[in-house]
Image 1 (cartoon, helix red, strand yellow):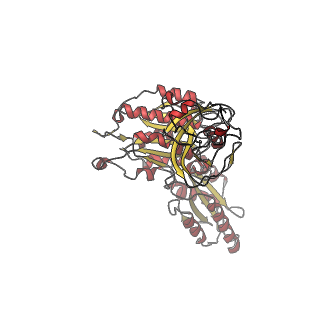
Image 2: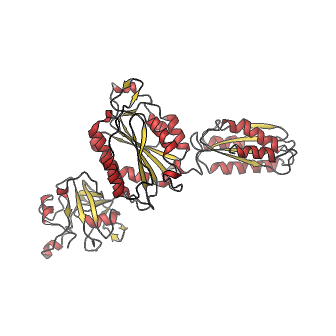
Image 3: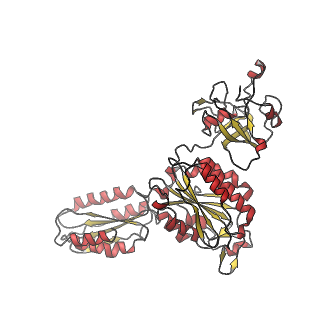
Length: 488
């Protein structure tokens, strides 16, 4: 019965086997072997309070059957608990219960006095009939398949104060513990910003959570002023400058960037940035970096007059759907968003900016409109162009599409900056009229290079797709080599 209560737990719980929870949260240490079916679990993600806490921890994926430390947090009762099978444990359904709990990986801020080792011998059959293995544990997410490269940007200026700087460090430590840092999983590095940004450690410096947490503990506040001109703002952060530093210096092969793992930059902002983030964020996104903002507190009415971009988060993130931003009302609530943040950064299917095959490219179609193509085949070509375009995310910060038609002459059908939605692009392709004439493919490549790709953004990959039905009347090799040498 080692996965049940200990006498010490009675200090925290109602002293009867009723699943009454007294403490709002504490750490528990689960021994090996709690996968046994006799330790019942009720619910999925959120568990009824009389569930086996360690069994629930295994069910949720917080620990495996070898045991480990977990954080247990009390939550409200539910009108229904859904049973499911997960990690070798079958949880049961329950129609209603008055109290619930969730579980996660432990965090370092808790007093060791609340560390509980779940050991108790069942002394009577009366006790056995109650599922009193203590209130269950739930994990709201699983990070077992999480492979991302993470950079955290933290404010080290004097304006943030020592106390909040320590809270930042604890938050980073909590995230590292929850992520379970490792070579086959997530890796993380930290950039501190004061007067100038600098890398505390990069992706390849530490390859397990223990070493990462130890390194975080050693980070000292660099100081400096988060300011604009000569006006010092007490809760400000040059996020634009810090993001530019990340784009240029952090996600490098020499710094441990793995290429196949999504790149994620998480910016902790105390209040508001005092520089513009839009351009720096665009450069980061177009480099394939997913930007998350964790904003703590915010500008009060008096301070709002110093805010450069009131809607800076919307201008910075990959998608303005709320997924990439988390607002925390107080520094003392920061630890509560650890699970939410980890769950999001590990949801690689939704990390839109990391899909660099479908992102951050300017694709120019150079279409042969010569007489030999014919009206019917020309329409087939346009359908081909539309089918390719459908596969991409079309926007100013994602993929952009442009088109040139040529015969002996050339015509810009539409440029990269003309259409910013997929439907607009498809409609524009459909409207292209067949021209008819000779075939000068070399001149068309030069024209596309000069008139279409000259408007391409610096950080976007440049792709020219030429569609022709036969031999050109002019030289193609020279123009093609020139375009290729210039990145097309």
